[in-house]
Length: 116
Image (cartoon, rainbow, N blue to C red):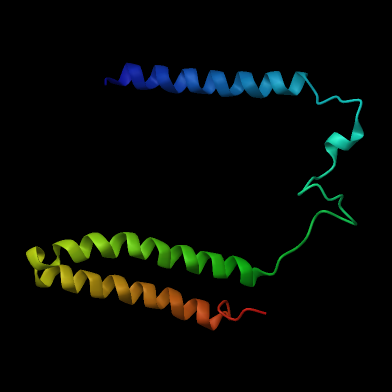
């Protein structure tokens, strides 16, 4: 793929996205039924405000889950080739676990693992 194709691809992408944004700004959402603009969840009408603030602890817990979930993606391939690669791979995975341990220590220090 040469550079002309990449430039053309970029230009077409910008034109299509810009055209969609421009088109959507000319056509506002209109409806005769105001219930269509209400928040909906499981057929139950909302009581009070729909916007809730969550504590940061939930987000930290989710980020820690993602970190250790992604860790398993890297550990399984490493375990399959460990016998072939030798000491180098072992040292690299120790460094990897050390960095993950720092992430766990950070979460522990911020009390992200306490579910309240």
